[in-house]
Image (cartoon, rainbow, N blue to C red; front, top):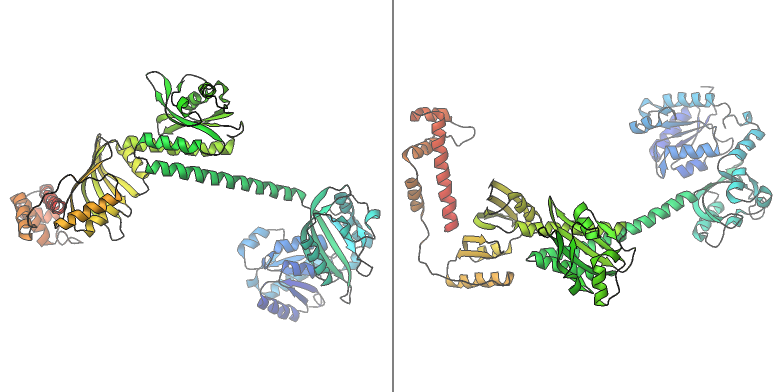
Length: 631
């Protein structure tokens, strides 16, 4: 161990127990160990002629081992380093750049690696006399970062050394800098808190790192990262402070630009959320396409900076875009507009290209409408196609007083609005069908599963329309043909269904026509319940009308009547198949008897048996649910 005697190691690890073990284990091998827990303390522990090797865990309290190693390269570039960790990712990332020893390999392996590294770096701080003073000074002079040395033994800690990079960064020559405290670089915008942090660290003889705004000789400001560390003599007395200045102005500029971009994006998000919220509310509350379009235009015309809006619909027979509704300073004139679809104005281009068009409205038909109305003409127009799927429903046209109003971000907002409006139009178009209630289940979580048969409906468009409804959690097409099908709707918090259930009402029929009006027929247990049901529905839906009431003394169907009805609907073979399957255990899992065995017992084929059984099941379930929904 004689080659290890007196070897000085700085061991850096955030775990206090690990630091104690390192001192004990390496001390047995004759290694002199100092410890630190952080990158900051580790860099402060590097002293000239004071350490032969640095050993570090990969993750430290204030950074990574690689941060520590990079700092060491600046302060003492020839001090060897070793990564001591069981973190496989860190070992893989280090590769060949940094020697590694796994903690699980033990301290004997670490001691050998330290000896190898110290022996391989004879010119390191383990043998400081091997580097001439001239070589050290040249290395400092040629370093790519600004280096300064201050002497605390002199009044006001003056600079006694600056390198060339410092001169290049600050514009001050060495003659202009030496003998002065480095605060001469500070100015009116230099952060006083950062300056105070440096002063406190110097007073405490501790290393410090800050970023602050300094000023060059010509008065231009620049951002610098300043790392200051004390240098001790053999007795531990601080004899110098070394400072490293890195110009981080470009990074700061990039951060400011990123902050401006973030602020712009926040503004965009707020505008999108505000406009989409208003338009979405208009869409949800509207009972017709025309009402929705009218409210959308009104809200857009009220936006600060906008002066008008109109929505046009293609009139294919005349090959024109015809105004459906408008709002703004010249709403009356806008309402009479027509635009040729083969023209070159923004609305025509938007309809033809399927993309937003922004331009000068001077050639737009609206220009004449504004002039005729005696109003100030707009300076910009944005035309947004209203497309949903393969269908073009028209174009939304918005006018602004500012020529630069419709920048890229504003266009994103309008495109989003256009998609929302087009989806709503498609929903209204899809709603032109008839829905007839087939039955439903009110689940324990409050959700209502309702089954409707749709006629005169495109299944895909009906599902799309249901997806746009905030009160419908899910819509599923169970069966479909060319003119409709059976659909299941999962409705969240159906207040009217709960109201019916609370009053003991049972739905007999519920039909929704193309005009959007619903016709509901229910059975209630007594006259008072009928009034309660009507009052509850009237409170929830404006325009609710009571068409008729009828009293009935029909008793509830008994179990005997239900059984008799089912038996009358079943054929003899169907009933036999059902009885054999039930009593034989066919409906259990696993089957107690197979379909083939039951078929053989009836003297029929397996396929014929299943036909009888399936027909019996269908009649039984139909009687159950049809009777349930009608009673």
